Image (cartoon, rainbow, N blue to C red; front, side, top):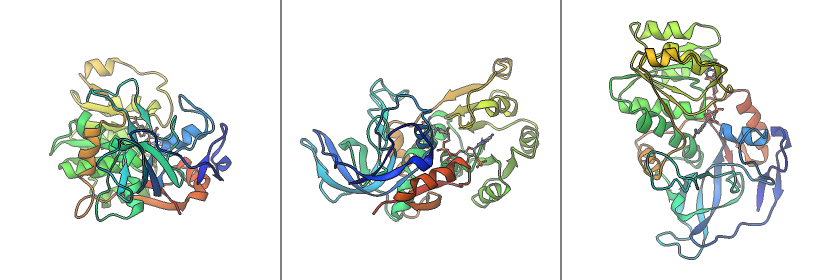
Length: 336
Ligand SMILES: NC(=O)c1ccc[n+]([C@@H]2O[C@H](COP(=O)([O-])OP(=O)(O)OC[C@H]3O[C@@H](n4cnc5c(N)ncnc54)[C@H](OP(=O)(O)O)[C@@H]3O)[C@@H](O)[C@H]2O)c1
């Protein structure tokens, strides 16, 4: 098969399409013939050697849609030709509150979806949602799952509450916007781009603030009667997480799921205890989260936001597009 293979730490332009051996399914596994995959910020970190547990060579990629090409021994209730979406959250474990010690994300250490074929445990494939294109379905898994758990399971967002989503152009952030809207919440966003703020407004956001050009904490306070939002969803981390503590409502919640801008240099914890803040970490999601998230998408329901579609051979260019935060929504790769 052909696949994007990473042989060493490098830059997106070092990623090339290569011929590699087809995977073979072990007991309880299936092979999926992929028609589309999608990128996540994780793929950029892996390419640059900024992700724990690196191994080479590795085929990155966590999101995929396609059809079952072959089955390993002991696989029941699936057949060759079934149209499936892949849940990249592997071996979550028995505890809904936290993943277990054997938890892995597809695309490292296991070979991922930037390939014509991928091997996954049978329990990680589900029927694809109806009424969506291959590209739309491929956009869903990792970002949709992360957003669902952050907003619903961990954030416990309620109808009528106000949620602030930081960096709305991001893949996870756009799913968080859709899911929060669906719940009946009032959504505010930040972005480094006026155009993306306008896009978010067109999708129902009630306010948007440019983190590059405005004092967004003040703008958020003004938009919430001086109180701050009930919930903040942050995948930015770094200094922005520290600033988010100022924006938070006393007694409010913050869910952190990522740190695109790096580590937090210093957090003044006084604001956490004085404002009685609830800070929740969130990573990926359980099988229950995945199924609940998936039920929101499909015919007559939510549609994922696909920013651009690149052929698999142009994965390097697509990753550079992500590196420049040029996207609004998901960057998808079409696989022949
Ligand atoms: N814990 C988990 O399970 C999990 C799962 C998925 C992702 N993540 C992490 O979450 C982060 C986002 O992932 P992604 O795939 O959605 O990334 P992405 O699509 O590349 O989005 C990153 C976004 O970050 C925003 N951003 C950059 N600097 C910012 C700042 N100073 N303030 C506010 N926003 C800023 C930009 O938004 P604008 O373009 O609007 O400015 C950019 O579009 C990554 O760090 C990723 O590793 C974690």
